[in-house]
Structure formats: C-alpha cells, structure tokens
Length: 452
Image (cartoon, rainbow, N blue to C red; front, side, top):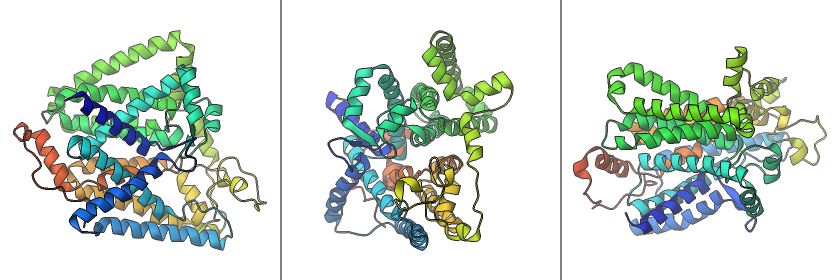
C-alpha cells in the first residue's frame, strides 16, 4: 500500500470524526461539520441516481421517515398547545435525514478509498477515531499552545459552547466531550468486544492485539472525558463473560484471552504507577472511575453524577403534562423571553434524564414513538446484516440505558449501516473469511443502498 493510500485513509478518518463528533469552525459559524457533509451528500446522491436513472428510496427508510414525522408532529402539537417556542424536536425528521446525508457522504468517501464499504470496515473507522479522540484529548490538555490554537478556530461542538467546556475542567477532544462523547465511546467498546470474539474465527486474528489496546485506551481515557463510557465498558465485559461460559473451549484456545491479560495487566500496572506519582493523573483517574474507587474504599458504589441524578427524578403532577407535555425541553429561561415560571438549573424541570425530558416536552405517547423509532432503526440494520444482529441490539441497549442519564441519539450510528448494501458487505466478508477470495474484483456495479 503506497503512501498516497495512507493519506486517503487519514482523510477518510478525519471525515469520520467530522461525522461522529461534529463541531463549528469560527470562519463558518452556524454550519457544523455534519451539516456540511450532509450538503455534499445531495450532490453525490443525485450523481449516483442519475447514473441508474432511479430516484426510489428503500422501504425501511420510508417507514423510519414516517415515524420521525409523526414524532415531530406530536412535538409540534405540544409546543403549539402550550404556547412555547422550544422547537428542538419539532424538526427531528429533518435531523434524521441530515444524519443520513452525512453518513452517505462518509460511506461514499470510504468506498472510494477502499473500493468497498462493509459493516466491519465502518466499525474499524469508528474505533480508530475514538482512540484518536482520546489521544487528542490528552494532548490538548497537556499542550497549552495546541489547546489555545484549537479554541481559536472552533466556536463550539454540536451541543456545547467552548466556554462551558473550558470552565468545566474536563478533558475534551475535537468535537468529543461530555455525554455525547461517552455514548460514542460506549458503542466503540461494545463493537470491539463483538469483533474480538468474532475475529479468531477468521484469517484476521492477528489484529486482536490492536483491538485490545484500543479497548484499554477508550476504557481509561474515554471515562476521563465522559463517565457515560462506563455503560459500554460494562456491556462489553458482560458480553465477554457470557461468551466465555457459552464457548469456553474456543475462548481458551483463542489468542484473545492472552492478549487481554497481557495488555490489561500492563495498563493497570502503569496506571497504578502514575496514580502514585502524578497528582494530575490521580485526579483524572479518580474522576473517571469514581464508582470503583468508592466501592473499593467504602464498600458502596457512590458516584457524584448518580447522586445528582437522584435529585433529577421528578414526574409530572398533572394528567395534561403526562399526555402532551409542557412544550419545554431546554431551559425555558434561556430559550423563552416571555417565560416567568420557576427557575431551573440545567434543562426544564431541572432534569437531565432523557425519558423524563421527553415526557415533559411532549408527553408519554411521544416518548413511546421515539423509543419505537430507535427500535425500528436497529431492526432495519438487523434485517440487512443478520450476522451482526447481536451488535445492533447491543447498540440499541446502550441508547436505552444512557437515556436514564441524559437525552442522546444513536441514530447516527445506525444511519452509517443503512448506507451499505447487503451484497457489498457480504462480498467484503467473503474476502476476509476466505483467503481464496482476496484477489477477486467487484465486477458488478454496486447497487445504491438507498434503493428499494
């Protein structure tokens, strides 16, 4: 592989980061990287459709769009009935297609670099970008000039301003911070656990050490950035434990267990050394694994953010709010100049819990539609790529668990896989699983994954 191919791969990785961790440049305010990629998708899509003279859209995407429209309409009704101006989710069907547009651009770029796109290849890019974001977060914190430069060209991330991040004294990457980074890291950890248990059945088991190293980096540094990463860490560990007991002989004979023990052992040894010699590292690692330190020192799981969540458990006190909500998702003091109600810290009703925020915004039935939307998104990927069905259901589980802490969205992950055709993925899988296919070329044109 020549130097030019490596450059193309790096560019594809940067675009992957732009998609997964969008942010705004100071010279292009109001347009984040995800939106810019979605704009390019229109040109790519029209070009591809013009070649085959076909403007049809896949059936499952039409169904998802209808569900997103229903959800958006229910939110709009709540806003109108309650006479508020919080339109956050009223255009969610647009956000859905913006994510799909960005995913379409990204997969087209990766396809131009590698000649194909597969589920496994996309997962590799996701994992690699998360590792790079963890390394960047450490570099930004340790190199003041780098931090100053980046802060001068970035207005803010897709969900938070730079001023808030600097005031929080939390590690952050480029577009990667707080719970938004945490859920991406969680998905990356689950993906590594899934791929690692699958790899030793193929001719690619030599990459197991890289996956294990990536797992350790994301698990440690990812938790320093956002403790939501623990959700993915726990699910990944449980997956490995279950696979170990269900397939003990294969696990024992695989290279996964030795590499896990060696790399985790080195990481723990180094962490213990840094914990005892570096005060800054001690503070960061204590923050990252506060619950584990509390369990070891006091015998109980005690995390500051969990204690804060207990104070955020508040339910509607009237039937009208349960049915159609109050029309507020964000903090009304910040979004509504005519609001004269109670003062809340953070979001409406002072709660960050995703389930409760949507109930207060537009009612419990709207929440049900939103839950169903993500279920259908996962189901679409499962039907398309049955080999990875466990992974997709685990990604959905990550979303549902994280909603107990904060409102977030994993549709962007499912959107990536919706932009791949089953035939293309199966062809790539054959090449990886059977060495004799390695020299085969794609003689037939790849069908557009958005076709019915």
